[in-house]
Length: 494
Image (cartoon, rainbow, N blue to C red; front, side, top):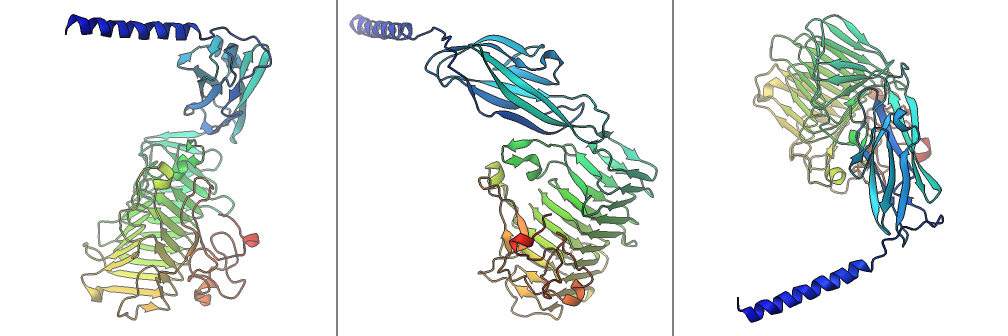
């Protein structure tokens, strides 16, 4: 470089340096002691949902602002209960065993983060216990508090547990399952009403024996993931699929019952499979909800099954996959509007499979399928498929059922009083999750739904109450599916 140009560049850089020096020297570094200046916070209460004792919570955070035009010094920041608190804090990356920090400078219009966790010792109480503390800030003699709230819940840990005797799990405390909970062959696992099973990531219930899960409307049995916190403020982890494995029923002679059971947000709901065509295990599902699974809601291979007054909904693949055996669905809603885009802000929707797949292409026992007073719907134009290699071996009976599929050009006698999809159809009250309005899926028939008033009343008389407990016979014209339309003021919730 020519020396002349080098000198010019050097002078220019020197000038910039001098300007920056004067600029920063003019910044007021003084700390205001004005007691009228206060901090502000992103929230006044930091709440943790249920926290299992000894396990600990996820990390939550709160943002602390200095909204003033003057610099402030936080002379003390800590927990109200100090080192004795079950809560632990981290201030902008710094930790302190006493949970107390001093002399933290916060520039005008600047902010800092306080990260909070809680780990609670067993309470020896079956019900949840309220655990409180507070973040305390002292600035210029002003004391400001942010409340910390958590519900501590004792639980029974089942880690890689194999059940080798007939066993009953009670409703006293929830069960936290790490690894698989396995039921040995010829043994029966019974779940009492109100029993709650929380499964850690990839954990499953694997049954080589029998499973009896009989809840009640007021005390349903729950299968779900163990994340009780939230991905976002308005999105509980329980809204997100693939939080755990699923329920696998693998006994070729199994006898399984599900009544008033809620299974949600795993990889697969119920996988009921038998590889021996000389046996026909049995599965009964009633008054139950299988909802929000990354793959399948209900898979049946070579077994007899009855599903009554139940909802199977929102799966990444088939909601119901039937292959071999006798399968009966009565007053059941199968609805696949799976779409996590509006939950995770990432494109993830169902794979294009029909909500219901009936297939004989595998090596299976003869099939008989009944859908009576049911609804089969979803976001795709075709939510129902039958694949049969040997038509004379398959027996179907579809009556008084709404099916989201264009009406075939020719219909066999197995379809009676079936309503087929029309573009104008509005089937349910709500088929999406709206994060802003906090509106979740509701598969009750819309007031204009084609599923209204179409059920066979003689069948409905056998099941007079819908899944919400409403009387479906009240107007003398019951609706198809698990839910009866009701005026808003009369609706009961799930």
